[in-house]
Length: 116
Image 1 (spheres, rainbow, N blue to C red):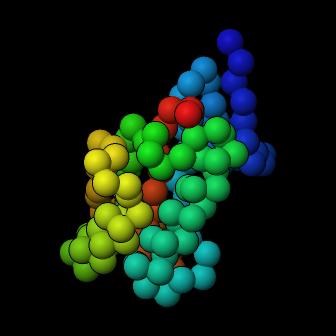
Image 2 (spheres, one colour; image 1 turned 135 degrees about the vertical axis):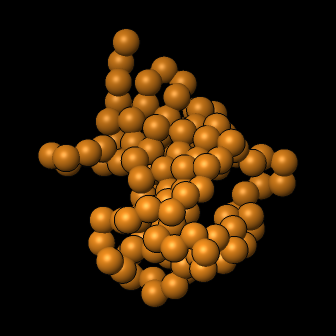
């Protein structure tokens, strides 16, 4: 059994593959000031990590979305999320409100996928 770790540091790996499964840690935005911009930044990071792991957004199995304020953040995040997904390729998904690691982070997303 081979476990491959991608973009690792002393605390975590950006992605871990095992057999045909790809697990991404929660991805957070860079400098975006609003939920829509931050969601786009996070999805770009997810695209890059999935590509490094031999997968893509069309092979998502599950997503967990953490929002700092679900009341004000859910609709704008969903707008960007829905535009990003390919038609008919939506994964299972959970969205919830959570205290996030930094005060300026409004959204964090983790996913599980399969390799292509």
